Image (tube, rainbow, N blue to C red; front, side, top):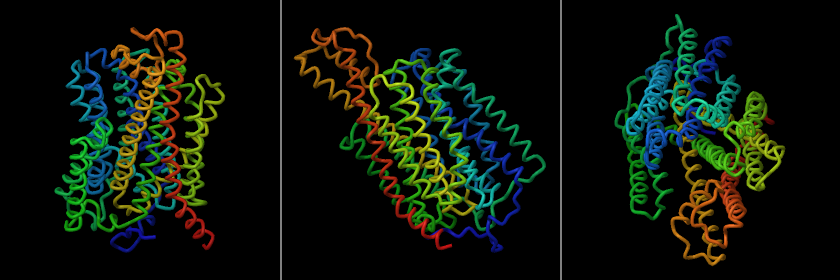
Length: 530
C-alpha cells in the first residue's frame, strides 16, 4: 500500500513524540466541543428556517440561500484552510475559527434583514471552514499514530450525535424561545471552547510545522482549488434543480472539469504544492474519500427524509420526534469508543465494511416502514442505524487520515470534511429530488385515474408540495372524487416516495461495502501474517 512518508527531518516518525495522556484527552474535549458546535448548527438551522422566513418576510428562494451561502463558503475553503493551519499552526486557526463562528452567530441573531443574514452566513461558513480541519490537526499533534483510533472514533461520534440531536435542540429552541436562539446557542459553546483551549495551552508554545512543510503557501493553487470546490457545490445544486442537460448545469460541469485539470497541472509544477503530488497518486486516499462521500450521502440524506416522516407523516411535535431519535443518538455514544477498540484489533477497513453493511440494512428497514409504525419498530431501526454509522464514521475517517503525513494533519481534516460536505450535499439533493419527483408522478397518476385531469393547477402545485414532505392537510379545490380519500391517498403516496428515495441510500451504502471489501480482506490477511 502506497503512503506518503511522514518522517520528520531528523528521520524519526511523528508517532515517536512525547505523549501526555492528560493533556491529549483534554485536547480531545476541546476538539469535540468545536466539532459539535459546527455540526449542531447545521441541523438546528434547518428547523429554524420556517420561523425565520415568517419573521423576516423572506421569499422561499432567499431562505434557500440561508443554507446555500453557508455550504458554498465552508465547502470551498476546507482544504485551503487546512493547508494554512499546517503552516501557521492549527491552534491559531482553531481559535480564529471558533471566535469567528461564535461572533457571526451572534450577529446573525441580531439582524432584521434577510440579505444581511445571508451575508453573515457566508462569514459563518468561512469561520467553519477554518475551524473544522484544524480539529484533526490538533488530534494529530496530541496523539501518536498508534493511539489515534479512539480519538477519531470520539470525534466522529460527536459529528453523528450533534447531527442527529440538531432537530431536537432546534425544535425546543424554536418552539419555546425563537429562531434567533438557534444561533445564539453558539455563543456560550464558543466561549466554553475558547476558555478550555486557552487553559490547556497556557504557558505552552504553539507547535510549529517541521521544516519540510513550511516553505511557503501555494496561493495560485489555493485560488484554483477554492474556485473548483465552489463550482462543484454550485453545480450539485444546479443539476438537482435544473437537470444535467440544462445549459447552466452543463457549463458548471465543464468548468469543474477544466478547473480540476488546471489544479492538477499547478500542483505538479508548484514549489510548495497545497496538495503534494505524492498524495494525489495515493489510491487508498481516494478510496477513503469515496467512502466518506458515500457514508455522508447515506447518513445525511436518510436523516433528511426521515425528518419529514417523523414530523409530518406521524404528526409528532419536534420534541416528540426527537425522543424517537434518541436510540440513534444513544447508540452513537455507546458504540463510538467500541469502534476505536475494534479498529485497533481488526483494522479500519473491516470496521467500515461491517458498519456500512449494517447501515444499508437499517436504511432498507426504514424504507419499509408503514404509515403508523409502533414506537418499538422505529426505535429498533434507528438503533440499528446508529450501530452501523458509528463504526463507519470512525473507520472512514481513519482511512483518510492514515494516508496523510502527521505534519499535514490540518490538510487531512480539510480533505475529510470536504468529502463529508460533498456527500451531504449530493445526498440531500438526490434523495430530496427523488422524494419530490416520485410523489409528483404518483399524484398525477392518481388524478388521471380519478378522472381529474382538468383539476385547478393551483391545487396540483400545492398538493405536490404538501405530499412531497408528508403533509396531509385539507386543500382548497380538491377534486370531488378525492375528497373522501385524500388523507389516505396522500399518505400512501408519501410512503411510496419515501421508500423510493431511501433505496438510494441503501444502494450507495452497499457500493461503499463493495469498494471496501478488497481492502478489508487484505487488511485481515496482513494482520494474520504478523
